Length: 120
Image 1 (cartoon, one colour):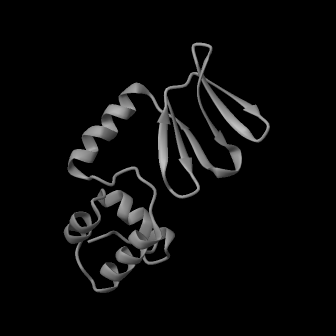
Image 2 (cartoon, one colour):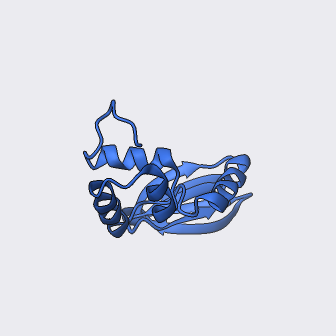
């Protein structure tokens, strides 16, 4: 299984065991049959998923619906606003539907939380 994250932060999981390149496209194959293709310029990242990873993500999303999804600009703006209003970790988790570690990482990326600081 390959997770294909696209430029618009959307993603799809492709059941592939092989990738090839064809005229600016990444072609995905499973057992010798083409199962999908995406234009290479639209792909932000490719991630190999183990079968158990997919189940783990499903389970995690029961509690944190946005876990492992790309961040949209709107979500980053909401995170910034809530963080600057000094809301606590529990409120951020509830409002954003994300795991505390994911929120903490995004705050560091946005330079709102220092590397040695913890989300409270």
